[in-house]
Length: 148
Length: 148
DNA sequence: GTAAATTTAATTGTGCACAATTAAAATTTA
DNA sequence: TAAATTTTAATTGTGCACAATTAAATTTAC
Image (cartoon, rainbow over all chains, first blue to last red; front, side, top):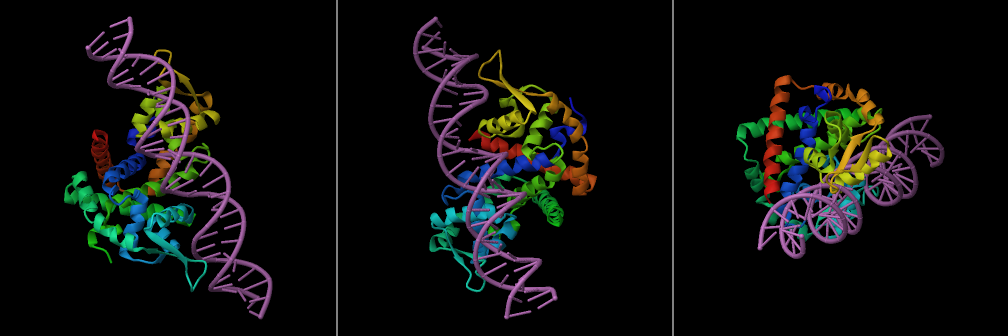
């Protein structure tokens, strides 16, 4: 038996890692109608907030790099949700935009956040504190990772 | 601009998803000496707690299935951390055990949890509440996912 | 105004992560 | 106990996820 600090059940990072994966599974039935994966759903959320942004900006908002986004966006383009085109002003940039299908899909997504929160079944106050700790941790860890 | 409930910054699940990935990156330099990935480090944590368990039990503790574990454990076997052998009692089961190298590696891991927590830099009370919310959410979501 | 440095995506290669299927072994049931 | 069911890993196929490299375009420095 290893020392107490090496025990898995004591490690908050493992809780985050496991919870993230279980929540992705929880989304699966809710995303069936849209016919997208959870990361693809996040791309749509971004574009419904602000259409026609660069891959760079998409990556900044999702904390993902082009090695992840490029193939994922190509799949979403093939599936008819988005278009990808080089910027006229800066040929290095690729602009991602919603197609009519991508825009129309927002309708099918409207009920998802509420359905998800219902299943989490958490008090408003705890949820708020929980999210605050997450965002604080994310900001802090992102900063540390960036500096290196 | 989409409705408020569809905005990414309002979604707690995205915070969990992004935080999990950033924390995995934070572990990377700490795992360099051990020369393992974060999921592989979790396998070692389990085995340091209790050596010689089945793939099934490993999957139960890590919330991972054989499709993930089998190839990962094979890589760890090739790297010399573990052995894999069929159980004598039940030929369906595969027992995972530490090699001498795997056992000796615990020494190099001892300081990791403390180093990580230092970087998170969170008050003891907030950390405790944060972890409680995570475990509660994990239990709840796991239960929902299992029932289906 | 050109050379050097920076920015931006894409590509390549490795390692998870998981659903679905397969196959073998063990257990339960008729 | 023989047949049906269940359990356990492995396999297959798809989709992230990210480090490192490449290539093209832009910006900065001289």
